[in-house]
Image 1 (cartoon, rainbow, N blue to C red):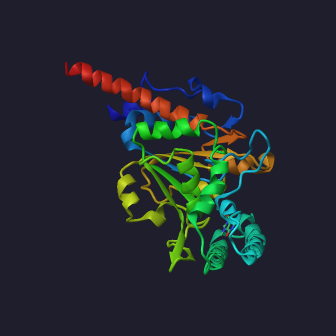
Image 2 (cartoon, protein in one colour):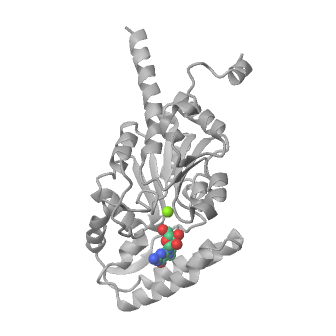
Image 3 (cartoon, rainbow, N blue to C red):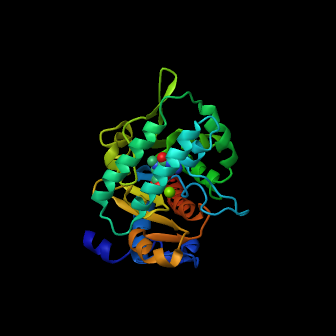
Length: 318
Ligand code: MG7
Ligand code: MG
């Protein structure tokens, strides 16, 4: 009977203590039983039901590099372009110093923050208007950072492609930089879609960002409603979400409530002060982990079971 199945976990199901990567000291879970249950759902459902949604800045790129060099954000890559007018740099810095504290203010309610964020992205788009600009400038700077991706990112994207898992890279940053880094790192496979803010051109001059604006607090699948990508993934109800900021945990909030979601949070800054919130927000919290090993391990479990199923189907049809 169905209810019996739920109570008595089948013998073949995975136990969390047997998944070595999840037992590492720096891998924290508030509710390991929940993670175990969802992993078993993922493994049973197979790759056809999976989708991945990931942030870009400091989630696909490293939070800390071996040689201590700083990795710029996607907006940072744009700002480093030599041909931008001097006034762009000074004005854009001013905006950053005004709005960044609001973005991360732990006391201001989110609805109030939203209007400020819309203001920030709008003013930033207005600054990026009225002068010539060439994508090759971004490409040149991005080429320096294609090695700043987490260890095993290349293998991770190859896994996702092999398993035909739709992969959404969701960024409130600058899409032109995101795509440029991913391309030059050779991970921009056909199953990868970048939803972000892209530069717009008019009469050969820069003309701000294309619509819809993606800011910190609308970065979820509700902005994709009715889009081509939404149609591709809305039946994929097994979701891995990855991010380094608390807001990233909501990236899949537009999906049906019946979905199973594992949220992986990469925590690096102010570990002690942030730990509580990260533990409550993400199912798996990785402290100073600069690799893709944990998400890869989840995919490996899914793939292994999938191969077993395929083998047994092949054998039974002999
Ligand atoms: N962020 C948002 N805006 C800007 C901008 O115009 N310039 C710079 N340098 N940074 C910006 O990756 C998304 C993050 O980028 C920051 C409009 C915000 O902090 C946002 O979370
Ligand atoms: Mg980020």
